[in-house]
Structures are given as C-alpha cells and as structure tokens.
Length: 218
Image (cartoon, rainbow, N blue to C red; front, side, top):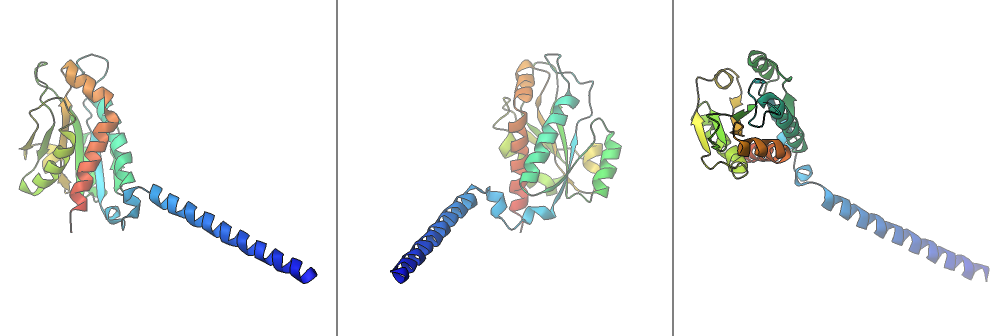
C-alpha cells in the first residue's frame, strides 16, 4: 500500500512540474509577442547619435496668442526624444532657449550623426503651407524625403516640400548631417491648432522618418 501511495505521489508531482512548465512557456510566448518590433532587432540603431535642437524663438507667437514657437517646439522635441529612444537611438536634447551657436557646438561634442532643428513656420497669417524640410544638399535629400513622407500627411497644408538651404547657420555649421524641420505654419488658426493638438503625432512622425532612414542603411 505504501509503495503504491508513493508511486501515485510521484506521478502527481510530475504532473505538477509538467503543468508548471507549460504555464511558464505560455507566459514566455506572450511576453515575447508583446515586445515592440524594435526590441527584436539587433540594436543597430544604438550606434547612431541624434541631436535635437528645438526652436528658441519665443517671440514668434501663435495665431491664437496663447503660446509661441519655442514652447511648442520644446514639447515636440521632448516627445521626439522619447520616440527615438524607444527605437534604440542615442539622443541628446538641446537646452530650452539656448543659442544655436551653443547647440551646434554641443552637437559636435556629442559626435552626432544627425542634427535635427525642430521649428514651426510663419508667413503672412493666411498661408497654411504644410511641412517644409530644409537640408544642406543632395547627401541629405533621402533623409529629408523619409521625414517628409511621415510628417507631411499629418499637417493640414498641402504644399509640402524639401528645400536646399545651405546659408542657414544651423544647417551649414554642424558636422553631422542635418535635417531642419518646419512642422507647419503657426500664424494661421488652422496651423496653430494642428501643432498644439498633435504634439505626440508630430513627434512620432519625425521619429518614424528618422528610423526609416537609418534602418535602411547597410
């Protein structure tokens, strides 16, 4: 009787062990599925350094007179930093209100691979033009296209474009490739409301465009 009882106990113990192992395997499979796509990559993005330089132009008020370019670009840049870090990039964010001369020096000292000024645009209070991306020359054109392809569909204006702006200080000074982003025109109510209400979407679009560019590199 005792030997039979011990045998049954061993069988029960084995079943418990098998059951526990099955539960652990199921839990592991769910946790793997829950990982973001980036976490499954070979961390290729970690080798790239990105410097974000939000506009310091606090005097550029928005159409509704409740905010300004610096305030909104600080928000967009902070959110973009989070999105890029989620993709695995090494990111530095310029200090709010700092001079662009200091930003360029800081970017170079950071050994940035990419320098990203983030601005909002203005013209005459009537023109909601869309997303503009400025670059130094042909070498940055693909990068600009990748960013524009993500951000332009969001912004309300429909005259999105890439322009060569070699005379702009924050384009020609940093050692890194530079993509200078004008997210939309803030001096119209339509553009102003879009920028204020879509910080997270704008940031995600910028991050997605940058990720697309670097992930396509060999």
